[in-house]
Image (cartoon, rainbow, N blue to C red; front, side, top):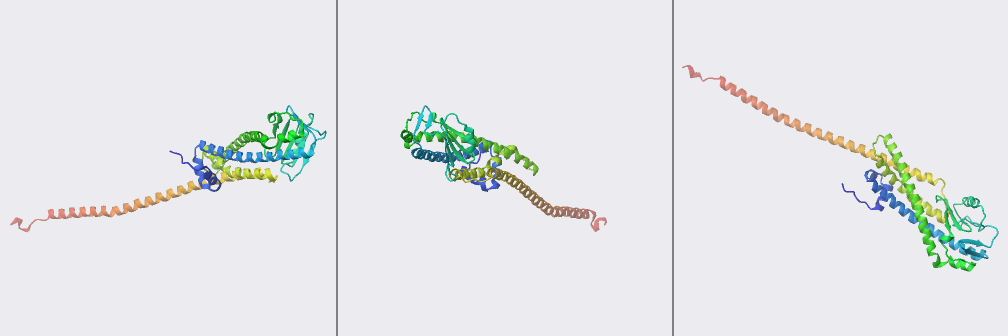
Length: 331
């Protein structure tokens, strides 16, 4: 049987608003469902990575402005950054895109202590002597970018440093940042979505048995994948808003999970309802066929009866004719 092709974005819209179509999703091939979540994750990660890259661009501009105004001397040699400041520089501004930036280029420092302070905020940057650490509560772990992987030239003064992080000189850095974040986030989110779909499929399988509906795990897994559509889109919107405004929603992850559970439960109940309706229609059809068959039998009976009566009458007349003799036969 040839698989019916559906526009991907139409399938997204259907997964969000049309529970009746989940019966078709349940019957889809496993490869079709995995392809759907793969493309959805790809779109999600591309948009998020673009947002993070733009945010990184703003951070670089902020560093350039800060160095220009606040730092007297700065140098970068053999991948090691040195700033003319004996004390760590801590910039805190809750209304900023980056609420906290800590700069400490001394070699013997307690990095974990700084990260604990940064983790009090949704986003923060720690600038060390050999690398920059970007922390965000939406990332599974902090992202480290080493100077040696970006800068190949040695810088001996502030002007050279500012020129290096300005204009076209940073295009390669932004591209490297984009690719690094994209690959990392795609692996994390795709694996996470597959795990979520497996969990939803298992719970859906159990729930189907509870409501006395026999569904294979493949069917409930497919349902689980499409049930993740709305939560993934809401998560995308939330990450973008959080990235540029630092707006947070408490227990958002609980809401994310609850929505997907509701979708699976409602989809299974809709499938059960549809099957019950089909059985009712089948029973009605059988009754109608039985009624029609009975009416045909009733119509046939009088015809048969008339034929029998006619045969009996002809038989009686024949016997009567054989029993009578003419009056003059003995004369």
